Image 1 (tube, rainbow, N blue to C red):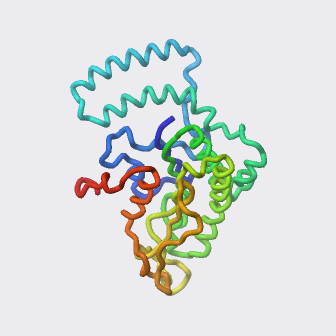
Image 2 (image 1 turned 180 degrees about the vertical axis):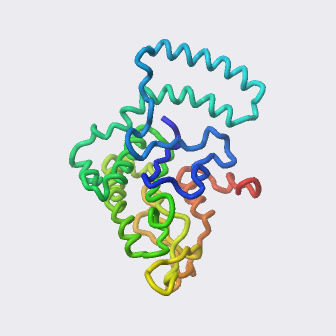
Image 3 (image 1 turned 90 degrees about the vertical axis):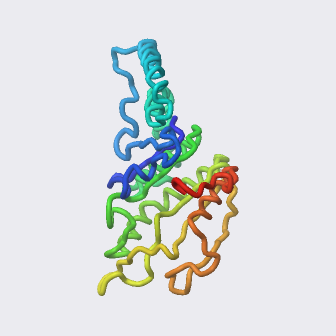
Length: 278
C-alpha cells in the first residue's frame, strides 16, 4: 500500500488541489495517492481477464529493465523515479488493496458506530472506517477532507455560520468520535497521531450587515490532537474575550509541526531549513 493516502470529499477537492498533498521539496515518491470518495475507492485493481499473474510479472520486469536504463541518464529526476516505482506499487496494490477497502468485512455494530447507516454521516463515516483499516495495514499518513470546493460546500461560512457549521459538524462528529474509539479499543491509538484542523478560524463579528456569516481569521483558532502520546484533556493557549486573536501562549504553525515531528520520534530542529520551502 502507498505510504501517503488522501481521501477527498465528494463535493470536490480543496482550493489549490493537488498542491495540498504534493511532496513539496522532497522527492516525488512522497506525494499522496488519492482514493476515490464515491464508488470503488481504487479503480482497475483486477488485471485483464486474459492476463495471468506470470504474464503480468514478465511484462513489468521487462518494463523495469527499460526504465532502469532510461533512469540512468536522468538520475536526478525524482518525478521520473517515482513514476517508474508506481508500476510496482500498483502491482502490489492489486494483491493487498482489495481487502483493505472492503468494508463489508466490518461488523454491523462497527458500521453503526461510524454512522454508515445514516445518510448524514454515511460518507465521512465510510472514509473514517477506511482510514482505520489503512492504519491497520501500515499506511503511515492518511489525509481526510471534510468538505471541498468553495463556500458552503466546505466550512467557509461567509453567509450563514450556524447553518454551515451545523451541517458540516453534523456530518463529521459521529464518525471522528468512532474513529478515535475504534483505534483505542484496537490498541492503535497510542501509536496513531490524529490531527484535526483547517487553514484558519472565523471572525467573532458578522461579515455583512445582515446574516451570521463570518470572514476568515488567521489570528486565533483551534486545532486538536489525539493519540500518538498526546496527553488528553490539555488545552494550550487562549484567545481574547471576543475570540478575535490569540493572546495567551500564542503558537505558530511551526510549533504544531514541531509537536507532530516530536511525537513521531524526530528532532524538529534537525529538520529545519531556512530556505527552499521552510
